[in-house]
Amino acid sequence: MSLFARLKSIFSRKKHVPRLGLALGSGGAKGTAHLGVLKAFEEEGLVFDVVSGASIGAIVGALYAKGYSSADMAGIVESLNRKEFARNLRPFADLEFAERFLGAYLEGDISQLPKPFAAAATDGATGESVALTEGKLVRALTASAAIPPFFRGVEFEGKKLYDGAFSDAIPADLCRSLGAEVVIGVDLGAFVRPEEERGRFSRMIGSAVGALVPVKYNKDHKSRGYDAADVMIKPDLSAFRPTDVGRAEMEEMYSVGYLAAKEAVPAIRAAIAAGSGKPKKEEKNKPQKGEKRKKKEEKPREISPRKEEKNEKKEEKTRKNSPEKGEGARGAREKSDGRKKEGDEKG
Image (cartoon, rainbow, N blue to C red; front, side, top):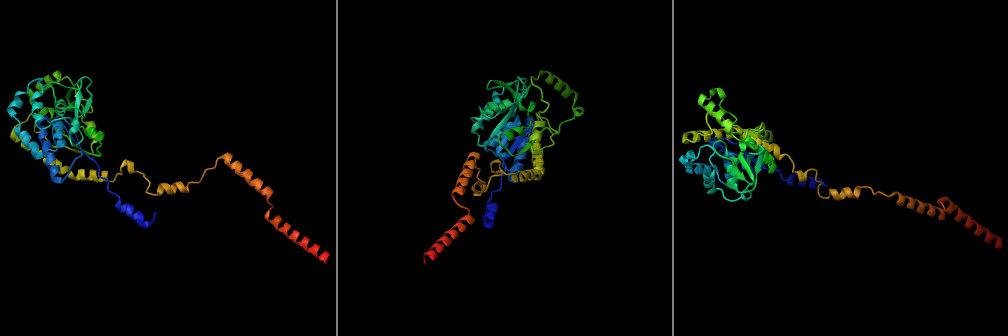
């Protein structure tokens, strides 16, 4: 390849842009912080190609995958009838009211969303994580958010499913499985109230609830998300509860999420830059145009033993039938001298 052609191929090569994934964690009403995170991303021009979520993170993630902005989502939250929501917070209630509400904004099947999306849920029979990537969207979201003892399990394709927080609270691994190369996670529960700071009533309720919950937290319910994420955003929401639905509290959680995302932007850009340097799998070690043909021509021809033996016999036969170079010249001279001698004698 000429120098000009080599330089042309270097400068015309497109820079690899990694597929960005966003994994939104569980946390109930703390999910308002997710909207602040998305607002920060919008201001920074960060757009995600793949989305996953657990519980409230699945709901916010599905809205993002559908194309709603953070402002659109804030409007949806404002339209929520808080009194009706509070009335439905009774032990083991069904989530039909939530399906009706979400159905006004998210209709159809998961596969119809403009961006690849997965909701994490927990199988009530096995306790294992279930990745919901197809089926009715609003049913998948309520299954991912069915937190006992407030809500009963949701039947989804033959399984009784519960909140994804029990098995995959920040499903960054699901983003990876959907093709994301750089994954950003948001952990709403990174900072929790220490047990000693909670009141006696809260501790008693916690113990009673633990006895009624049909599923338990897996040991890796959070670590698997941290292992799969390149950057984990951790808003400090320790001052809030998952049931804080007051306007003032929600506005403050929004701000906490916004600031945490802004602080994480340099780390996110560094992760994207590191991902940009990685060649695509199909382009790795791919020969340049013309190289393949050249290598083929340069490769020495292999001769089979039978063919080689045949060639040797042919060469030997040729040698027998034709005189050596020296013998041929000497014979010619002798013939010429003989003829000359005969002519002299006759004369």
